[in-house]
Image (cartoon, rainbow, N blue to C red; front, side, top):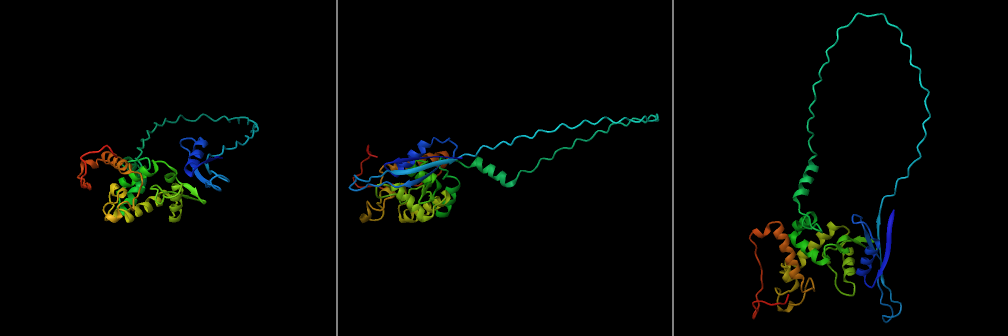
Length: 292
């Protein structure tokens, strides 16, 4: 059975969230959200103005139909056969009951793949977006990017649970964009990012994580912007590029991501290892400031 609702909002983000809230789905339900209609400003911003509309739904198994039980016909009871009298036989010696040796059950070997999975589940840390484990580690190894950095970036961009990480249908295709790559410009940056993910074929979380990590590595880390600070403030590529090629516009983002990264480093014992910091020093730089 499909449970679904539709909802509207002034923006795409608002419509998607309103649909989720109106669904009142159980916590363990696999909720799907898709965009039905984009918002429109209308003529001169007054006439024909339309809101964004989204649909949220989840499925539950149908209750099985009980078949009527067939009544069993009573069977006629058979009369006990009369035993023929036997002549008295000679008494036979009683046989001693043989004690059966109890067979020891040999322990069955645990399935090797299942054993490895169980061990991995115990050793592998989990996060709200799971980027420090499987998809993040695999993508990080392929693109030479820290999985802890990928997890911190996704937390900053999606809050650990937006439609960009959970997936949303765009033009009939479910896409993912945990790093909000391409989400800029216009009144609906989230929708622009989802359109970008659709052009890249990020139709699964694994594809989106690997593809996003590759773009972060190619366009930022390998171009000298190898810290969160430099990705916000591009001061390493010449005076002419200052204020350009910025990954994010939020001035608090470097602080928030750095704090998230430190939390993960502490959790996994990385703080105990030698770390290298790249700290730009400016002329006439104050010793401290209240600004972020």
